[in-house]
Length: 198
Ligand code: GLN
Image (cartoon, rainbow, N blue to C red; front, side, top):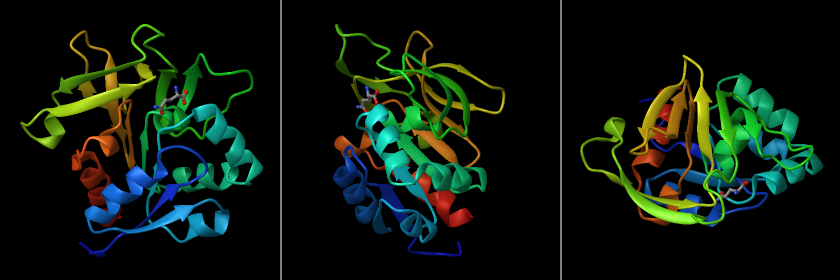
């Protein structure tokens, strides 16, 4: 373990930035809010929060962040995306708004707002073997779904019907739900383990 106190960023353009910053701080990380390329250069890992993916996409382009985030992902920066953050990490999306782009990096197709208006939000206990025996209480809020995933993508959690809601590929981690709002720290710990191992 090279760095005991990892220096990580939360992409702070829109969304539930503070919730992520709180969890990461509680886990002992040194947390920075990242809005500019110079701030991105300083961190050893990045969280992309939940929020509205089309807004984060637009703001990332307005702030000159799209290219730098894509380059950092390609260079192996550990990134954890929740909900909108999962959408932004997907190589392919369905049901994006007109012209919506992603940073990409994960070889998955993600459907935005996959649960429709009837089931806008719901909660469910999920088995996530990589995190141990205790199930994860997962909160879904206008959540996306992984519709298909390439061979290199690890499926970390699925709903009872098999639909994929958490994935990992190399240094990239993504969940369709929001551990940062329920006191669930194990996904962030997994992310920080990846940051420390690089
Ligand atoms: N539906 C949102 C989007 O398209 C994601 C919702 C969320 O992050 N809770 O980005």
